[in-house]
Image (cartoon, rainbow, N blue to C red; front, side):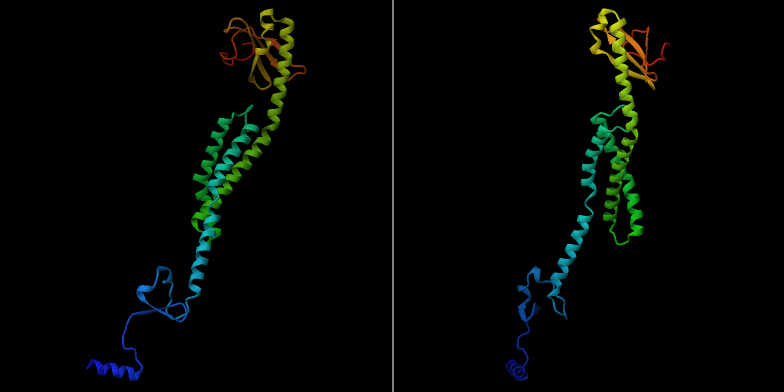
Length: 252
C-alpha cells in the first residue's frame, strides 16, 4: 500500500517526504533546526533582504536619541566646576567668596535646576515637541537650565563687580590713612606692628582698623570714613580687637 502511494506521488511530481522547511534568503532551503538566531528575521510572503537593514536603522535611530539625551549630567559636572570658579573670581555679593563656599553654592543651584526645574521644563517642552521622548526632553531642559544658571552667575558677577572694585579702593585708602595716622600719633609699641593691622567693615564706607600691641586682648583701633577724600580717621577709645568687636556704632 505504501509503495503504491509512493509511486502515485512520483507520477504526480509530489515530494514523498514532508520535512519542515524554511526559506532563508534567496533560493536557499534549509531545515528548521539549521536556522540560527540571526536568521529569524524572516517575513513570510515577501523578500527578507531589507529586514536586517531596517533593524539596523532602528538601532541607529535609538542610539541617536540616546546620544542626544545624554548631555545633562556631563554638563552638570563641568558647569558646576565652572560656576564655582566664576563665583570665586567674580562674587555676586559681598567682598568675595571662598572656593569651597563657591563650590557648595554652585552645586546647590545646579541641583535645584536639575531636580526641580528640569522635569517641569521638560514637560513644557514636550507640549511643543511631541516627537521628543520624555527622557530626551528632560535632558534638553536640564541642560538648558544649567547653562541658564551659569549665565545668571556671570550676569550677577558683572553687576556686582563695580561694588567690589569700589570696596577694594576703600580698603586701600583706609589702609593708607591708617598707616599715616599710626606712624604720627600711635605709641611706639604699635608702630612696629603696623604690618599686622587688620580691617573690618562696620558700615558702608566706614571701616575699623586695629593694630595689635604686646597684649593680644588690646589693640590701637581707628575708625576710617572713606566718603571723604582723603579719608577721615578717628581714634576708637575701645581697645577691643576686631575679632571680639561686636560691631557697635562708631564712637558708641
